[in-house]
Length: 260
Ligand SMILES: Nc1ncnc2c1ncn2[C@@H]1O[C@H](COP(=O)(O)OP(=O)(O)O)[C@@H](O)[C@H]1O
Ligand SMILES: [Mg+2]
Image (tube, rainbow, N blue to C red; front, side):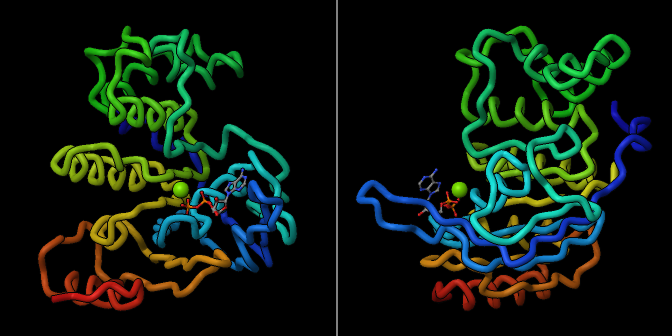
């Protein structure tokens, strides 16, 4: 398995300062996808991000990944401005873009291959494929995979590079409830072992509370941070105890969802 690999990643401290991102919609009206976002993320912190559709969660992750630039403000990792993608910031986005001509094994190996370090890390590729439960499918091509399997390939592809920061955009959204809970525990396990900084977008309140050191709640129009809730429960957490339920109630209130 992957336990012996823990030394590789060193967590990154992420600073998001006065960040805004505007887009033009189809009618050439400006959309404030993100408006004045400020967030200091400690090295090794596990941040979950939740909020209604369109509040800018994916946009924020894309900015941290460096795939996109802010309209205003600055994003830094360990004091250095983020100006483009880098393998030390691994990501797995909502709709994983796997290379259709590569099988699962070679999709996961992409980053190592690009940096010329695949030869010495072949066992890592196998280990992460095993970790996400896809050993039987390592020679399968993306068109042969379900949405949930493709998401797990994207996760393994990011992890194999031992990123300082891992950016996951609803990575478990396509999984059934049981697999999802198992994967949440796997992600916690990986985070414990490798101590990377984690930004995890989810739609699921339970998932946000179960995983996050802090939960960032966002609101829409413009996309901004509504509230940050520190989850003061030691990990591993229990999904069904009273304190957990108190946090859930708080979050439902904050998100404007009535609890019967
Ligand atoms: N590339 C883009 N071009 C135009 N508008 C975009 C683009 N990306 C996102 N948006 C808009 O920005 C807003 C935030 O989108 P997004 O970050 O995907 O939200 P979320 O992930 O929270 O659902 C939405 O109104 C969306 O339509
Ligand atoms: Mg999104």
